Every structure is written in C-alpha cells, then in structure tokens.
Image 1 (cartoon, rainbow, N blue to C red):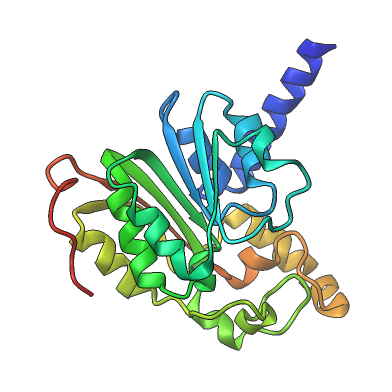
Image 2 (cartoon, rainbow, N blue to C red):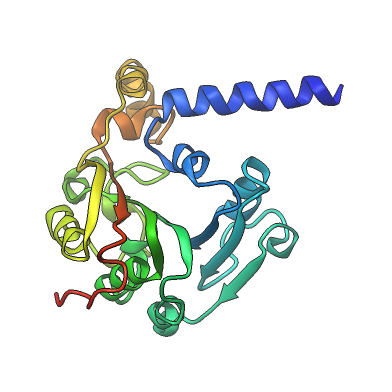
Length: 237
C-alpha cells in the first residue's frame, strides 16, 4: 500500500510539472539535494506542500501572517519567521548569502517596499543560488474581474504593480543569469484548457483551471547568481 501511494505521488508530481513546467513546484524539484530554501511570503500551505515534495530541503519561511495555513507551519518548516510588514525587507536583509534557493511566489505585489525586498532576496542567495519569482503581469490591470483574481485589483491587498523589465534589469545588475523569463506565462497545454473552458469561467465569473494561462496572468522569472558576483556591491535602483 505504501509503495502504491508513493507511485501515485510521483505520478501526480510528474503530471503537475508537465502542465506547469516553469511554475513553483517545478522550481522546487530543481533545488539541489539538502539545499537551503527561503520562501518569501509562504502562505497557502507552502511549508507543508514544499516539505512533502522535498523533505530533504532545509526550509525557512518568512511572512507577515499565518495566511491560509491549513496545517501547523512548525510541523513542516525548519524555521518560520513572522514579522511586521514594515520589517519584512529587513528580516530578509539580515540573512545575506545564506540560501541555495529563494522563492517569492505572488508576494512582491503585496510588499510595502517591493524593490528593497527584491534586492534583499538577491543578496540572500549563495554563490550559484537560484531565484524564483512569480507575480501578476502589468497587463492584468485591464483583465476582466473574476473570483480568484484575474484583474490585478480583484485582490484588495495588492499594492504594487510589478514592472517586468525593471525587475529583470535589477536581477541582471546584481550579476544573475536569467534562465527563464516570461512576462505573460502561457504554457500551451494549460492555455488550450483555458481556451476551451473560458466560456465557463466567464459565465461563472471565476478563475478555473487554465484561466491564468489563457490570459497570461502570471509573470515568471528563474535566475541564478554567478560565483563572481555573489558578494558584489548591490545595485542602486
């Protein structure tokens, strides 16, 4: 029975990565074994999901609240930091060159100091460390309004419309190589599903499977910091 459950989990993971080849879970599977991970804005059960997928990872989560955590965070996170929004960037800045990977999935748009947070995340990476960023594309301010957030302003906690080119420039100035970047991420399999289901989504006024891919709601960036620049002076923005 345990063997069957393990095979089913592996199958689900492969299907997920097939449909989402550049989203957060695919990135998690790419982290080096026993790597140290900083999850910036770790709501929506991210500690539990990450550690179940990669129990070998040393996981640190930082957030401003226990947002949508169905499981006790301390059951999964090796370290968990709860800070105020005003101290969010400073908490990351206090950990320079400490992590093999940093994830920031749909958090930057909620930050009071997004550019400072971005620089802090870059500085938190070790030599050859990898970064994952996902955030709503700037064009989403003109998308239809739907439950589940399709228009940027559907989420009232969004305070910053990320500028894709500016973020890319900041990452490059820090000496990172961009391994993947899409301003409007549209994996073709999910795009086709979203296209077929768009009438249902529009009728229900709700985001369903494939809706984000059909519209290209997400901007996604994967980057790696080079050994030559890991300790260099941070750029000014």
